[in-house]
Image 1 (cartoon, rainbow, N blue to C red):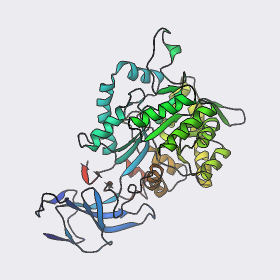
Image 2: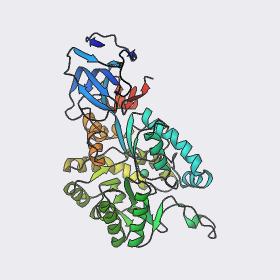
Image 3: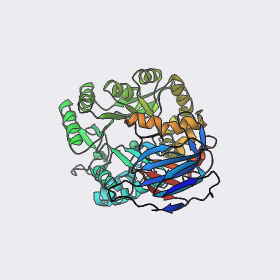
Image 4: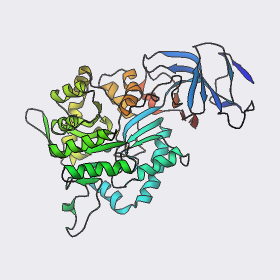
Length: 437
Ligand SMILES: [Zn+2]
């Protein structure tokens, strides 16, 4: 059966036709999505009255704006009151963490919650991410929950639980003695569980990378520095966690295995070492300097600035006697401007899980606009830029042949970035997971 959808189709967020035509058992279902506006995230152009045809999990066709479209579909979804845009991508999450603002929050999860219990909680985190409009995430470390991220990804891909498309990094890597749980805060006779894999020596670095890839890691995550300080001249320094041999071995093993390296690196001591070892993204990077910026532009390294999480913890930690996050918050607006003006590419990354999953996942958009980005540039960080970082050309953009990951919101997000905190409709892989609030 054919439908003709005039522009004046009643505007309600409902599925208006279902299973009208009969298909052979093997044929893929076709869904027509009638968009009030479709956002082109490359240009910022909002095309009015566009119909998208989705076949299975793929975008099959996009109509010309305003055209009367003759379509043949199993289902028609009326989003004529909404702005449709690509599903969002968060390049820095921790689905297996439920907020660790203090060291104690972290220790409690690692010591008192079994990995199965933490995985049950993570099922909920995955669902929240999808409901927030994030159809893809790069999860950067299970923080003591072993390879449970690989299981979550598997369960999502098999349709057992709802969740975003996941790229996982499994345990993450640091050097011996530099990550919680810290031996010094517990009785020394105890062998404390660790929030990641610890290595000493280049060979151990290679072994751990190989182990993690064998278990299903899409990315390798390292913690490149620690012990952040602000010097009298206003610059930041830290202690590099790895020897040059260690970090180069990890980078080499990662790249030779066709994986990518994500580096938690806050100041030049971690950032330069990580980039030289082949890192594709710098996580946090609050204390980067001009040399880091230059090298990031030169080597096309992305920055996941995780702005909200730093701001979220800054005041409380300052009151508890640790003001470094507050300093980062104060210098971040100018740094963001300088780095982006120089040409550093930003990929959206929140570090959610480091803060509670019930807190917003869209706050970084607002901070970026506050720091000088246009709403469209902020949107690009979670769409085309994020897809670029992930090396996933079929994501981040609504175009023919891409995967059918899209969201709908009321209003124009290129005028009001806060609207991204109120995603009304979510489709991932051609399946609808949210239909209105
Ligand atoms: Zn993190």
